[in-house]
View 1: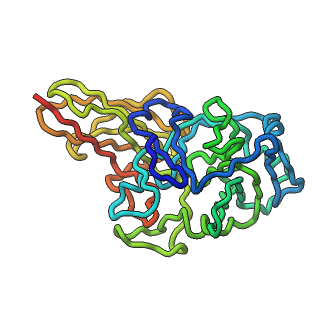
View 2: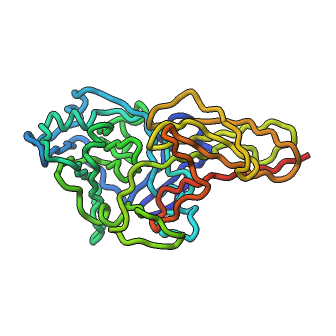
Length: 344
């Protein structure tokens, strides 16, 4: 793992280790705002209150008695790629590896709220974890649109068939497939359906994207931005030969994903985007998961070749040449480029 921050520890996964459909738990990127305060698992209960007729406190055993469900979904930090923006953007300088794909297992948010008797006036689900910030730092309190979590949301207690690891939110975390990781509350302690969205720094100021982005370097006021939600279409190159011979076939592999829909195709270019060739998509795929891809590149002549990858999703979203610069460094999804030295 590549440590990108010391307090708290944030670590990303090297791209050349992200070659499997499911990212192993011990290779999955780690994102903390501050040193976490883990719940006491023996005494842990999930409180359900707010716009419900029967407030509940559910143990892990209670959750396990509810109908079990799973989803394979990409989890990506909204700031993945922040270190690639120019001009420089302050914050954790993620490169490419603050992303992973896992099989999340637990119970539907819909089933838990139905058990509590969800009322019709609720529009937002307020989420709270056990994490507590240092003194004078605002708490990481978030909310997510209720329609989204009623459709897709899961309270997960397993990750890739194993109990949810401490670093990833044990004993239970919220899964919001297709949306940025700031919605995926770890170390869940309380869920509260409410008529209005949550208030506070991490809703009203942080995790917002300009409604009408300007030129690189132009900042916007919070009211000129909206919360980050759906992950934009993106591809990454994971393996390629740094050196090869002219006329020798070379394997290029990677992954691609989109929060809006499944990946429809990935194209690779060796001439700065003038022409593209279709990559072969892997057989494993789910709506919110990434899709592995591969391409055989055969260079014709000696020299340096710059390879690019571009993804397209099933809704017609196309990965752009350049990411939209924004003052928080969110949603970097520009074409990734790698250089191959071709020898005679």
